[in-house]
Length: 388
Image 1: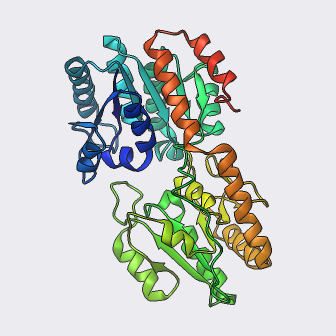
Image 2 (image 1 turned 180 degrees about the vertical axis):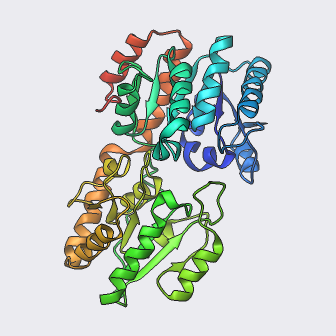
């Protein structure tokens, strides 16, 4: 069986879909990756994937560019003749589904989050919704990474409840992200935020909350780990980050290929995002038995059980975030460690990557056999993949 995976950047497959690729390869499938190339292409090829370059921009919607993208999908699907396609990210889901439907190739998309377009609203959101509805209407299965996103699509009529199923993000390798003891940070506890430095991730709120906390607790440390100047209209530039460092409010750690040492050195991992699909950084931190602080928004609240493995706070509110941080600082060390243990247990119960791998393999098997939407729905309900 030839399975093609398409995303808007090759690193997305390497970072998030590798367990699925490995499982498909172990089951004798040929796997090709269709995406814009980057530094991870040699690693994907070493994994056994054939890489095919896709010329696309992940940003914005330009009618002429998207017509060319749709034509590219059709041409590549005809030439490569995949038995099925797994798709992630907005444009690949929409235009890949349209192209696959036109030539009869089974297509299984995953909505990994709604992105900035659904935070801004307006005409652009309406246009994207229409595109989603058109692209997804005949697909037997569409995966989502949290119940809020699934509910939104169902409520807006973009998918039916029978089509839609929930997975716990990309899953987590529980051996790779093993639990570690809390650090001995004494009077200088560390709050770590990991991710691309975007406004929508709540970076400005994190910095302002740090100012407020440090006004009364100057020894507390706040760290940022992630890339500046990302290809996103809400990206934060390096000069702004440098000014925060000069102010002494945060420590900027740059980027890394392995977040584990930084998580291990932190007392708490923070994500004040405006909206998420399934926040990878929180899942990784919880797997390593770190308490969490995150906003009470879709995606984040699927990972953080308020008061058990961390605290939730209001989105876009530095004051609420600062209050949650102070609440955490007031906890005894044993209670902080207990939160970390609760998080690890939750990851073991709900977010093991084996759950995700099994779901994709079963979806591909059913879809390639031409199984109906109702049969898909009954199958996944029976295996626990349609959590509401």
